[in-house]
Image (cartoon, rainbow, N blue to C red; front, side, top):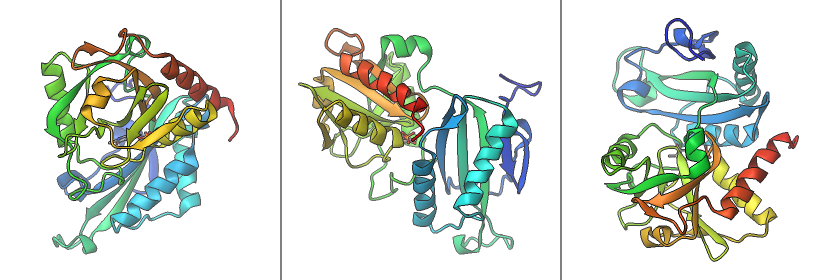
Length: 293
Ligand SMILES: *Cc1c(COP(=O)(O)O)cnc(C)c1O
């Protein structure tokens, strides 16, 4: 899955042209790089088809607006570029990222209004938050001491690269024998992890955080699948204790769908095996990939 340069195979769209992913570069002066001043979205392609592309484009375009940036293409143009990256790559399963950075100012002014926004897209091989063995047994997630950036500072509903809190949390987790991490907000309530939302199931009801999180498309799909299975979902406050005391836990992400968590801070959730509701939801999630909608 890597070419001679060691980069994953794939196709990118940069500076208005398609090229091999290994040759896609941006300037070191781009504020996307220097200031994490960017937004992005990721949609996956499974068996040659995009999954929920409209929702990902809606969220991306809303994020662009919230950051007061301008996309150089319209919605159809965006869809065409994403399609083209995938078809040129020849991949049937891929992870397709669209990015708009602040770019840079032609006069090197420090005023963000002077910047020319920079649109980049690429298709690369499908990547999973968890490997196959982890998806079978479920992972051990640590609740980090590091807190998620407050919503008063950075709007978490804009998908962004402000990952230093999440990365610090990942190191905390590895130091404590964990495999991934979830961060709490300043009040100690559960928010999300590096690239995923998290659900706790108790007495047949599912719960996930309403605030301090990205409104994940997979979170939304999982909520709809719960409705289909007549499982109630509480979108509200999930305390750290509620997570520890759950009957089952799962995470949701475009990079892997619905996946089981079987330990929190090393302590087994119930019998330490992936829960039955998680199993049913995962199956239904992948079955939906054959549904034309
Ligand atoms: C992308 C992401 C998610 C998951 O969102 P999906 O749309 O389901 O892929 C959750 N939290 C953060 C911080 C993310 O970046």
